[in-house]
Image (cartoon, rainbow, N blue to C red; front, side, top):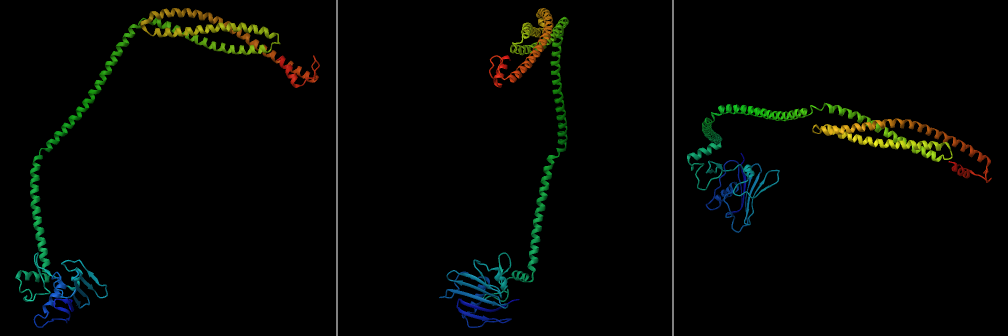
Length: 434
């Protein structure tokens, strides 16, 4: 337990500067009345409890008031106040820097209370007890207080206040728990009462499940009905198509003869395609005739080519006739296509028969054309022989021209005018023969 070793008072009430040193144990301050004994106690109260407030305790004529105590462990606590508004606590521990406290209001800084060990005892919510300092006219320790206050203070000194606090806390918690229990009980009763309104839920659940099954069955039936409606529509469409087909078949019952004629016309079509192929061959022959005519024209100095040209002209005339025949075949093909279209329509069989008769006449024309084509093939063979002969004569003429060129090169002079011949002159002479 620490104690005050020294007290220094400056400019506090009647004390301008007072220093008091205390020894261990009991210390008694004696002296005449009104000489400042009580002022020392008030100075300690100001330092320990921060009472009184204000600046009325500052010595008249002074600007600064200060109270300092030195504890037995060397700790120095100073309370300082000036008329200019400076208000501080100073705490100096041995070997540490001085701490300055400001702005603490009406309370004492906790560090100062911890250093001095002096504080007011909280008796209850409304009162506090000062155990370290007493008033000038106060009686001995707590004798002026009632028994309840004395018991509470002594209990706090012995630690009984902790048990009281624990008991109060337990009682408060018990009351709270009882209130919570009552509230929960009431809530349970209200919930049980509310649950009675839902006793029909299991039955309602069964009804919902049955309704769901019925709804599922209804959906399946609906899908089946939709499928049946679709099948009925298809059946109606197929029935109508079947009736139309039967009608058409009844109308086509007498068309067997028309089918025979159609097959006959298809044969004519095949012959037409053959004639078309022959027409392409004739065009190829025409090209070759043109080539042969060019060769024969360039070989005007060969007498035998003139006879061949006459024969080729006859062949070209025959080819022209065959071209006209091919045009007739194209017309017949168009006619056959029309006949096939007409034969496909049952309502126009009479017109098809008339067209068929006309096609038969055309067929006879095609027969005569076939004979002409056969003769044309014979002439084509002769033409090919003429072309081969013309090529042979052309080669012979080239050989003679080559020999003639060699002879001129050897002579070096023209046999007619006896003029000198060079390569360019010889080329011009040979070009005349070509």
